[in-house]
Amino acid sequence: VMFDGSSIAGWKAINESDMVLMPDPETVHMDPFFAQSTMVILCDILDPVSGESYNRDPRGTAKKAEAYMKSEGIGDQIFVGPEAEFFVFDDVKYKADPYNTGFKLDSTELPSNDDTDYETGNLGHRPRVKGGYFPVPPIDSAQDMRSEMLTVLAEMGVRVEKHHHEVAAAQHELGIKFDTLVRNADKMLIYKYVVHQVANAYGKTATFMPKPIFGDNGSGMHVHQSIWKNGKPTFAGNEYAGLSESCLLYIGGIIKHAKAINAFTNPLTNSYKRLVPGYEAPVLLAYSARNRSASCRIPFGSSPKAKRVEVRFPLGANEQVVEIETVPTGSLGLDIALGVGGLPRGRIIEIYGPESSGKTTLALHTVAEAQKKGGICAFVDAEHALDPVYARKLGVDLENLLISQPDTGEQALEICDTLVRSGAIDVLVVDSVAALTPRAEIEGEMGDSLPGLQARLMSQA
Image 1 (tube, rainbow, N blue to C red):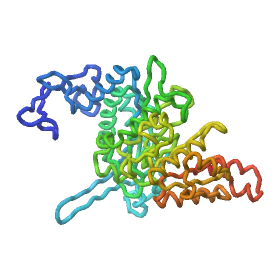
Image 2 (tube, rainbow, N blue to C red; image 1 turned 180 degrees about the vertical axis):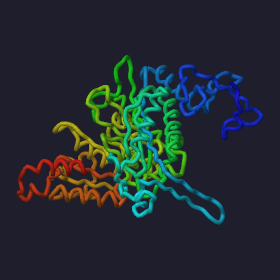
Image 3 (cartoon, one colour; image 1 turned 90 degrees about the horizontal axis):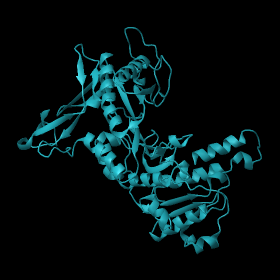
């Protein structure tokens, strides 16, 4: 099928406008939203002269990525599981002219409608700001609408799993089954189409805009990823969070090329308005087990098959929040494995291992390397066990190292919070999180609640 490529911004000039839509028979499905029977088929974009995939066709790019992975022997399949969040509003008004610029959003769920007069009365059931995660009806007013979205998706060949209300008022998410890269990219087109159409049928309007509401959570599209080879998951191993070395290198590649990736995953100024700490936004260019502030999160998985990386960039991460500077660890092999030449400045790094495995040594090497580059470092000695002689042998400049030996775990966290907020510290070491002793234990208030207190301190750290 021929079409005019010059009518799509950024594609073709008018003097070379002819392009080819090549239907993919495997994508055929029926559109349930029209009275007349309507068949839908997805297509690849081809250059009419060469017959090759057009280099700006996202579907063609995804196919090339899969082919490259196989040709390099990295894996046989890459599975992705996107989580696209969205808002549904009852009314949207906006205007932009020299005399009147602004917008107004409305939904019966918004807390701003607590005192609104409705014909049927104001029943007062609505989520609070940042309080909409998993409410039950009638606070969750969209149960039926989301259920219908899942039903329609299933009818159109998309394997569905769940749906739920998200953190913000009027914010939602549907869960679809993971699949290969190209297949789930196709399904996300169907996903967004169904969300818009069903919302419209309910007299509402849906948006995947990252941050439509100031002061509440925004929407992202987190993408869970895993690579398999010979029928086995390659991301499972014995490294950090149960990952393999190849998975850590995979994450390192994402972090190294984060700025370039961001040009595609966060193309709007509104993409960056979501990046405010405290809104579960990925404001840190880091990887971490279960930490939702990290741009690459490792979700908990009980089996090797469940090991994956959740890339939280799309419509979210802002790698410009901090400079992309790295601090060498003092270990060339580790710096290479990290993929960026060391530990990225401003990131949360957890060094774990058994007793006497070299965790403190690695931390001190990192401090020494940072000081060589003119960095300011702090060492929170929660164990009260810092050996100054050993530290000097590793190259640490103790005279210019900020050292604190807090009395309690709570005091240690307060010191860390102050140092981090100052923005003046390049490396902050806490040795160790496990040594953060609750004030209650030091004051002799032993009891059943003590393990819970220590666990809470470690979690906060």
